[in-house]
Amino acid sequence: MKSKILVLASTLLAAASAWGQPAAPLSFEVASVKQVTPNGAQPDRRVTVGPSRIDFPGVTLWYCISYAYGMKSYQMSGPGWLRQARYEIQANGPAGATREDLPRMMQTLLRDRFQLQTHQETRDITVLLLTPDKDGPKLKDAAPGSGDGQGGAQVAMSASETGGERLEIHSGAMSTLANTLTGLLGRPVVDQTGLAGRYDFTLDFSRTETAGSNATGGFNEPPALPPPPPGAEPGVSIYNSIRELGLRLVPQKRPMPVLVIDRANKEPIAN
Image 1: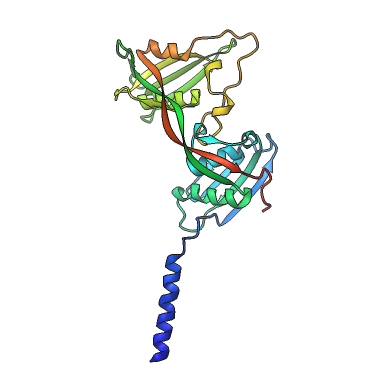
Image 2 (image 1 turned 30 degrees about the vertical axis):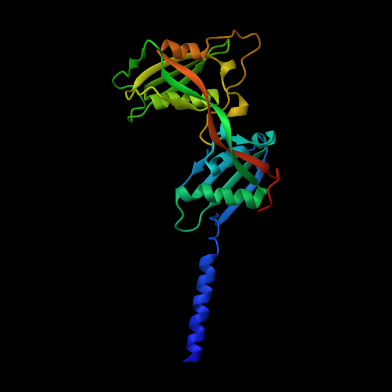
């Protein structure tokens, strides 16, 4: 009887000890990580995410960190090489893993294979408030049948030889316009118009006003536009094009979380 009591006590003690320990971080079951040349990725392969695996061909570490921590480029701070060196990462999660688990698995992979160290702090960041102009919006309702054919918006961009750009959005909500402007300008654009309809937008703008490489390159962000050709004309200001829609972009400082990359190894630990 005494022996049974001791066994039971030991079992309870072990269980209590296990309960007091932090849970093991989520991690991929199998992962391959290797550095590649800028043009080393196979051109027919695209980034694939989910449901329980990732395939990142020829991506930067900046891109991976943005995906892992759910941060936009304007919320990240780190050395320039993070945007330059390229890697090929293929990884599979354990049985039962979901798409929602993958970013945390990527965090573990970055810590294990690149010795990534980060911290988060709050900084004042300039946001742009998208608001109606003093005379009110001058918007064109979406034409019947416009959009992507599946109930969503269609976004297209074209460029002239002189460096001017044109953005066309068909059947876009105001959130579509705000998100597209966020990618172009490299700073958060917050919709405060109060408009709930769908519209067709045409915006001309100068490539010199766009975000450039310092504010792009993260997960689900558009690539940076190339610089305008030598001798290009200044072009139309995107702020003036917004005013022609009866809207305006108002800068305002707001505190936002920023992920600071303290350390990362350029060469990953071998597979």
